[in-house]
Image 1 (cartoon, rainbow, N blue to C red):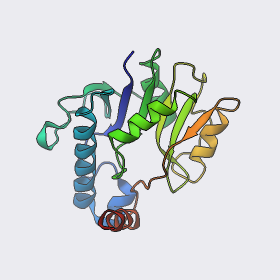
Image 2 (tube, rainbow, N blue to C red):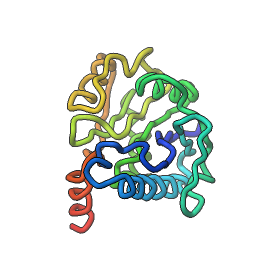
Image 3 (cartoon, one colour):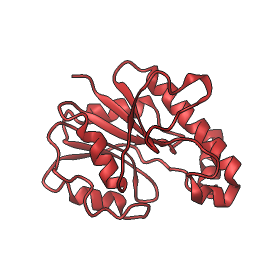
Length: 198
């Protein structure tokens, strides 16, 4: 069965999403960042035949218009209602038999090779996480044998998200991928630009 990469994304709209970044750099700059990062990620993933790419979009039934037709070559599902934990669990349940990974779209350094590394790690582990520098994670990949509630009692958007999620995997083998920075603020954005130039 083919591996599935699920890109979790908000449909790009001015003034909606990336609110912390928008407070620092303005709504238009935050929207430009979101569109550019999501476009680059989707184009890179769709070109890779090692896995299939699915976009889990919110709000439901929103249109996804990106430069270069970036969203055209990926299947589309709605995230549905509920908090982040409920929406992520629902997306993974749609692919119960094979290996599936959810990746965020605000990590400029992430790409197709990271998905491949996650699926490869599932050969020896039951879950793989891409840790973020702020204590969260930018990717989670699971094999077919999963906890009933993988995201229960997670304190999101803070330094405890990865540790809280890992508690739900107690007794299971977990692999960690490379640590990356997600972009939530102007400082994060500048740090990723400096790293890219370096």
